[in-house]
Image (cartoon, rainbow, N blue to C red):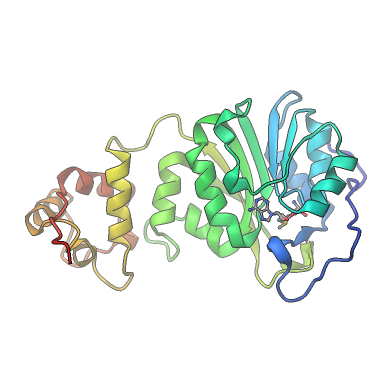
Amino acid sequence: MIIPASFPHTVAMKKPQAWGNKPKLGQHFLADHSICSRIVEAAEIRPGDHVVEIGPGQGALTGLLAAATPRLTLVEPDRELSFQLMLHHGRATMLREKAEDVDFSVMDGPLIVVSNLPYYASVSIFKHLIAHKRNITRMVLMFQKEVARRIASGPGHRSYGSLSVFSGYHWTMEELMIVKPGAFRPPPKVDSAVLRFTPLSAPPVAVDETRLFALVKAAFAQKRRTLRNNLKGVYTADSIEEAVTAAKLGPNARAEETPMAVFAILTDHLQKADIPAE
Ligand code: SAM
């Protein structure tokens, strides 16, 4: 894929943005061309691929994406930015709505999704994308660094949590780069990280997905408690004993150290408790 040498044509806003401490709609725009190029290169776009950019903003990535493929869909809820983007990228399909409201499953796929996500909505947009993963072949997404670590961590890591298990069930993930605040206008207060997601051809464990995720949510409910204590009240005492024995877990085992394969064994043995209605 050839990236044009000049910085892509970004769109201007009619009114200067009110850049206080908290930009509206998480609008921290990329102002570093080499980072934009690396993000777009990581998406490995071939001409003819259908690319969806979430939150194109002033178009820092959009020009590069449009140069890579003519099939481009832009999802931007900001009225003024979407209007300006339409003027500059007339061939692209513009959806002036929130990504969480877009049905990605009915788009002509498979899709490549690229985004410098707005921090405030990044987790809900990410979960929405997971729900449409069957129509997505690759994603390159930028998050606040802490959120990226929560998504891509493995057991034993400080950031490992239910979101990590949830993501690892669906995708392989690579952390491609850390992006410092100086790369954005206005600069955010925290570092960002770019992750590339490739869907797994089959789930890594063979258990009922809904039951697995209900268990994982319960297991991580309170960080300071042991796994066993977090499960109490949600599952029957007998089935907890049976499950932790089958999974060979010690009495002080914690969810933060528990790999997905062990959550799968627990899922097979746990029975929901009958919680009396208040
Ligand atoms: N892609 C541009 C860049 O890298 O310079 C802008 C990125 S900026 C961090 C996030 C963009 O997402 C903004 O343009 C903002 O208007 C848009 N946005 C905010 N909330 C959104 C949502 N719920 N769905 C889609 N886009 C959203």
